Amino acid sequence: MSFNLKDIISIRDFTKSDVDYILKKAEKMEPIAKSEDVCHKKDGKLLGVMFYEPSTRTRLSFETAMKRLGGDVIGFSEKGNTSVQKGEVLYDTAQIVSQYSDAIVMRHDMEGAARFISDIVDVPVINAGDGAGQHPSQTLLDLYTIKRTRGDLKNLKIALVGDLKYGRTVHSLVYALAMYNVEMIFIAPEELQMPHEIIEDLNKLNCKFTMKSTLLDNLEDLDVLYMTRIQKERFPDPKEYLKVKGQYTLNRSNLEGSDTILMHPLPRVDEINFDVDDLDNAMYFKQAFYGVPVRMAILDSIIK
Ligand code: CP
Image 1 (cartoon, helix red, strand yellow):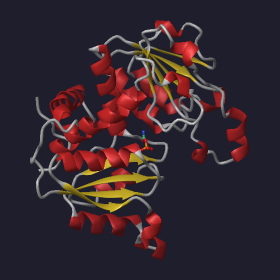
Image 2 (spheres, protein in one colour):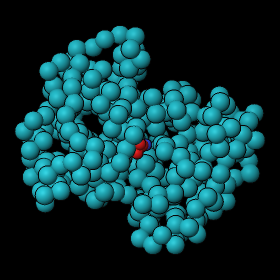
Image 3 (cartoon, rainbow, N blue to C red):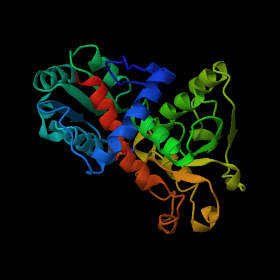
Image 4 (cartoon, rainbow, N blue to C red):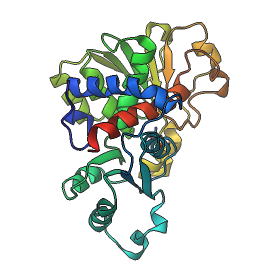
């Protein structure tokens, strides 16, 4: 098995074999991610971090992953502290960070931004989220979580709930699930349903899916329930956000006694009550931890 991608921009650039390669490598990285073993594979290498949008998990787990591999990190998590404030354009900032680092991980509010810089710099680029576009490393850790918990990715039934219009995690995830013949249920208010172009793609891929607006009564039929936050920051009109806010909330009684695993890319707002957190099938904190071995696998594969 080999991995030939230079950049990690969209899950659609991956073959199933590329995905399987990363998931297998991530398993080997777990003891290092847990600090049970040490690694010097990327000693002397630097990851350049460019975060134009807020992040907790993605940025910190990439930084942790790089350091666990023996490397180090430079960069910014807030564009307000950079020369962007003086009018520097993305093209120039990317050129500069690429002069100082061996790979770049970038989050940006503009869809296509990561692809744009990957075309102009010589170092590998990882898309850590581009507007409502893609979030491929999140997808890989989501798949890893499902595989570690369920044992396999094939022939599962998964419901994706919440903001399917603006949520980049689900826009990435559905393409990956389509590779594994997963049956999907899209649960969202009509105005936040999966974008038409993605639905068309899934039809072309002969993917099995249905669309609903109410949270299922029989959640226990599902292998995975994947909740998402309504992406307030992407609504052009705040009044539209208020209309759909708080539509889906899970509490302990919805999940207790069921085998369905509950995932969420986080942050949560009001989708999952705190009384769910200590159930065995509440996987979202473990899912966030799995971001470390998966991102170690990604960095190890693309930084030479
Ligand atoms: N899941 C995720 O992308 O979280 P952050 O926005 O905190 O990075």
